[in-house]
Length: 293
Image (cartoon, rainbow, N blue to C red; front, side, top):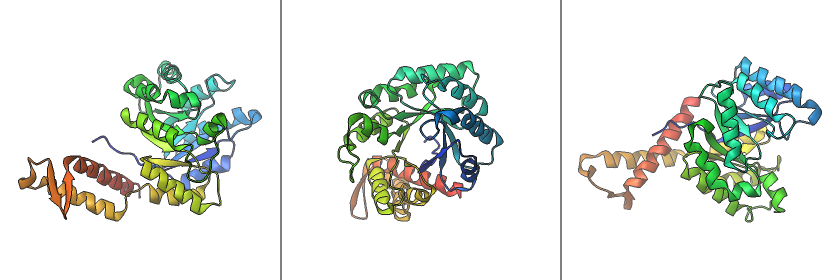
C-alpha cells in the first residue's frame, strides 16, 4: 500500500498576512495553503508572493504539508507565481481554475523546465462547470508523471457562483458535482478535499458538512479559520472503534484456516477480502495520524 499522508484539514491562509504565515507553524492542521489568489488584493500580489516563498524557504512547519496557491497562469501574476514557488520548494503548488488537462500539462512542463524536484506535487482546484464536465480527463493527468497531480481541491464557492447554485444546508444541489469529482479522483488514485464551509461561527453546520464529506469519501476538508481544524481532524480520522474493527478483520484473514478464503464470518457478519483491504487503509491512516503527534 502506498504511504498515506493525512489531509484531514487544509487551512487557507492569506499570504499577504505575515503573522498568519508565522502562526501556521503552531496550528494542528495537516496542511496549510498559503493563498496568493482570492485572499490577496491585486496591489498586494507581489509582496504576498515574496512573503509566502520566504516563509516556505525558511521552514519550521514540521509535519504540516505546505502548499502555495498561485494565481492562474493566464493572469498577470501566474507565471511569476509559479517560477517563485518552484524556487521556494513547497510540498505542493495549488493551481486554480483547472478546467482541462491542458492546464496541468502546461504547469508540469514549466516545472520540468525550471528543474523542480519531483517531490513537489501539483494540486488542482475543481471549481468551474467545465471542470466538473471534464473531471475524468483532468484526473487522468495523474497517470502522466510530468503533471505531478496528487490531489483535487473542490472550490465550492466558485462553482456555486458560476452555476448560480445556492449553497443551502445539506448541499443537495452541489452533491452530484462533488461525487462526480470524487469518482474521477478515485479512478485515477488521487486524493480529494471537500470545499470550505463559509460559516466561521456555525460550528454545528461545519460538523454536519464534515460528516457529510467524510461519508461521501473525501479525504479531508479545506478550511477558512483555525477554529475549524479540531473538528475536521476528528471527523476525518477513523474512530477508535473503527480501528479496532479493522485490526480484527485483518487478523481474521491472517489466520491459517482463512488463508484461501474469499469470505469469512466474523462476529456474526459476513466479511470479504475487499473488507480486509479497506481495513488495512483504515489502520494505515490511523498510524499515519498517530505519527504526526
